[in-house]
Image (cartoon, one colour):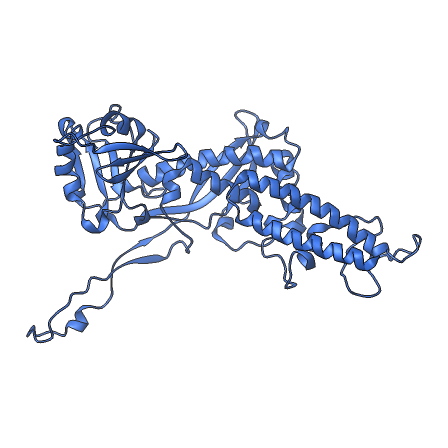
Length: 428
């Protein structure tokens, strides 16, 4: 009987390992929730099986106080009232084949439950679930509880859905306050018989022409307690907490990447003074509405090395002025392609167009003279630096007598290569 139970335990633990791996790799929120339900079910089965294993071949009144076994084949954790701690057990053996400690203590069900109680009811997170943090997030006094990894993973996914600009730029994870060199290597080939009077090899060394330094800026999102106090289950908590934080933060990130001042927030693309003056283009109303105007003033200034970029503009700008634009021969220049799944894909002059909300870039009709209404760049030329660790803190809004939760993200953004950016302004 013990051998059969042990075999079942091994099978369940293997299945649990597979499900946990899939849960960490999946990008589908619905699938993740289904996997979590399966994981919870297997953990319940393991609790019963290991309790049965500890009592097998032993009279009911002779349980070992430590829930151990005589043959030493299986490490079982069962106390006198048979309350089995699956999280602790999985850290020790079942979910860790190498016998190493779980590298992410914030991804356990126990911590997620404790985090939910902290946010919803103000119950302090037990000391045993906290670990010393050495990253930059805890250098502020606002770091009260680290958001569980599973919930954080869903927040980042939702940011990618809501904030397409944030999703497309380069993501870095480097130490703040350190200068990062921007390297250029443009060697030239010289005929060895040429009498130049110099050593060409010495002229072609890698040079650091400039550098950027990332700072620590905090992005916070405040969520009213009244929205969360009725939440009683972890699944319901994640369903409400994730979209609330994600949508607000995605909006703030997109706006900062495009419009940030660099003071207390990332430096936005349109405010970076390193963009060459010739790359800032003011289009008159007549030029903005015609292909000849765009061809002469914008496309002609695209350097070949940067032509893999894309346009960013408000949806109303594309719909009102670009969609349907034709050349002198009546051939379409701005168009909408529809994919098999029905998604709209915009193109203009052979370049991809990504539309953004009006608070990221204003629509042409609503913009004032000299306002930026479109930007062309390679998204990878802008970098957002963050460890993508978010923390949350409960606080009391004395003005409204409401308990709120503040979610904090530490990060900074900078334009790495300003030379391929084209900034299009509205002219008269």
